[in-house]
Amino acid sequence: MAMFKNTQYVSDFTLFMDDYLVKNPEVAQGQLEGRALLWDKAPLDLDEHLRAIASKVQQKPYPYQTN
Image (cartoon, rainbow, N blue to C red; front, side, top):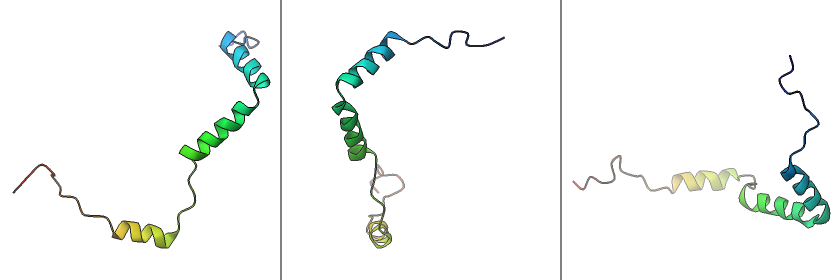
């Protein structure tokens, strides 16, 4: 027994988005630029990474304790 019988179904939203992306191809480029800005990171330089670790200020185990 097949779990998903109707594999030809396409939702209204999918049809809308497909049509929108065909009419506005610049949206896909904007998505790639946004991803690059927020998620894709440049490779770490080992020396810079070690300096960043060494320059961190040690935090107290319980920051609200004043004594």
